[in-house]
Amino acid sequence: MIEPNNQFLFTVTEPVRPKPTLKQRLLARKNLITGTSGVIIGAVLCSGVGAGVGILAYDYIKSPSPIVVNNAKNVTWVTAAVATAEPSVVTISVSSSSSSGNGSGEFLTEDGYILTNNHVVTLDGSTGSGAIQVKTYDGKVYDAKLIGSDTTNDLAVIKIDAGTNFTPITFADSDKVNVGDPVAAIGAPLGLSNTVTQGIISALNRTIQVQSSAVTSNSGTGGFQLFSGGTNSNANVINLDVLQTDAAINPGNSGGALINGQGQLIGVNCAIASAGSNSFSTSASGSIGVGFAIPANTAKRIAQEIMKTGHASHGLLGAMVYDANSATNGSGFSTGATIKSLTAGGAAEQAGLKAGDVIVKFNDRDITSSSELLAAVRQQPAGAKVQLTISRGGASQVVSVTLGDASSIK
Image 1 (cartoon, rainbow, N blue to C red):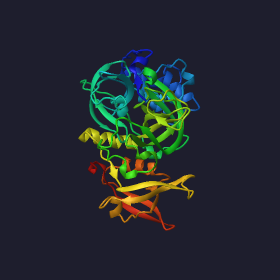
Image 2 (cartoon, one colour):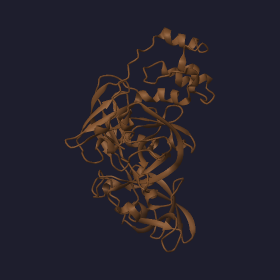
Image 3 (spheres, one colour):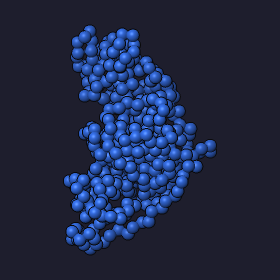
Image 4 (cartoon, rainbow, N blue to C red):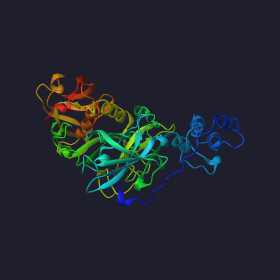
């Protein structure tokens, strides 16, 4: 969801607040019950905040923040969580000779590495060499350079060199997220920096297929020919394993943070459902309450590999698969991924898998379609060891597989 620059409505520069002195911080702590420490008081008195928010809110006074609090008695967990995370979130502007747009991102390190979506830095695949600028939460603007992209998981890392320290985002363990958990999205929808929306986690382990002009059959992702069947045989479609949320996400939010109640990153906002269709898009017109974010654990692994080597690795099963259907005529619900054929010497063949096997579980995750299997495999690094639960001749068994390297496909 990259927002074209010509749709910027406002340019808001937040004032830089001076860092409190030690005396001021101690006085703020002393006056917890007097109302002079606004955010902390609100966090303590608000019944919906929960444990730990007082500490998060105290962190608020230790660094400048664009969060404005007019009524401390009604402050919520969102205020405290966002006050912690927002200094780590940036607005990204990308321009080329033919187009421009903006998205969001978050600092990975103090020295300026930033995580965002691949479709943000490539303007939805239209350029690989756009000029990139970053605006931090306090309104400062820096030039940035692209370190590396991962088209398979729609992630990218950029870097700014500013001679100053930034506030890196704190990663949560996205494998421990529950449906119903409260979340907040931070980003620049429609170019409006420092925007916050609130919602919950609506679903886990959701797989969506997104059209991407950044993906080609020889893009280095290994293509999609090894997972043919259904729409995922299209070389311009990427299969993303995502968290689903009802927090409002709009064009410009892409690459921004989806955070938990402690201000920790649980996902990277990437796409929304398109109204009036069954498709999912990274550039749809607006939120209808069905948004998606790449899980923090996946984003962290990809980002670390890009920072280290300039690219990310992906697992390869080495099998052509198609949807297993609940009805013999091919209609009905998909109930797994059926192996059609094996690549000679590939990971699946070496593990003893056979044509006709139906893969129904990948590690602890249920698999109901070939696209879900593709997304699960490509989330893993090359050489990862995984457990597949298969159905063979009506009997269930667990098979250990050491995945190959998707970059081996030419």
